[in-house]
Length: 375
Image 1: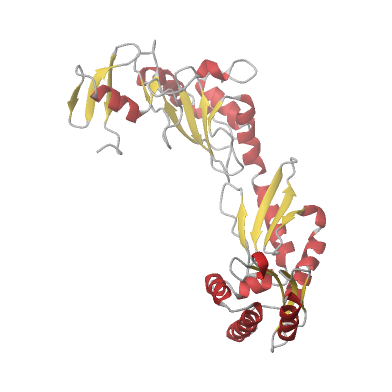
Image 2: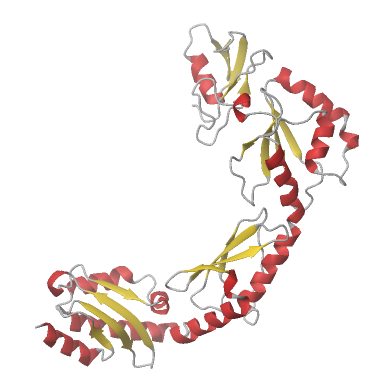
């Protein structure tokens, strides 16, 4: 029986052949009346049934049939046999070819052009390419030996249409695309962009190595912000400008008002000493008149910043941003945790959006405003 089905299939698609004796696995090509050829692979269900069968297409055909997968799967399940489905499938492909009016180039040309582009670019820069040849990852090493990855999603009409690009940079990678330049020109623009951020990564990299960074825990190349430890109860949040990393960054002190004040006073008093010829870290230490705690001189556990109520550092996207004002305590809390804790105590009182109560650790007076997420 399987031989009869195979013969009928051969009449419709002469270049589609069975690769097992059960006649459930087909590999080959579907030719259209327009002279196009597409590679397909068909795996039938148990005992050669169409129900549960799968059709795998080459990437050019996938692009041509994008958005119609559910329709084709429905027709495959409803077809009386494989031959009738193939006749309908080929007719559908021919209609799609006419509708697109040659906007999708032949798979062989597209694949050949891409191979030439990668050859010109250098195979050592290729990290990965998916089986459909639509998703490509390339790597580039900057002047300091840091490896950067550029992820590309090729357009179905490549190279006439630009690819979508995903990179890990502190600012938008705004590249210019040309058919003539292709991937090589895009890669050159990426290299130039990396060069412009070398000093930025040098400055924040020094901070990452020589201070205790609370946030982000694992900085990426795109991360502009750092929250670093100043003492057991105070931290400093920085926002560095990627194009001018040696300029005075936006700074915010986090901790109790009493603990913050000495640092803020030093900062304001020494602002005139800021010198863009020295590093960002050196400038900050000059302004604050201190050497920051570092992995070589201390342990991170010595500067625990977890919430004193939930014992976690992160609560969703929130971090402990409310600290006991008593410098001998200085215990940090999530605003939400502290608000709910104080509101549940009979000794606390609330006036408008502020709750007055006692610190859960030292029992000294503490206040907290209602979080914006609390109704």
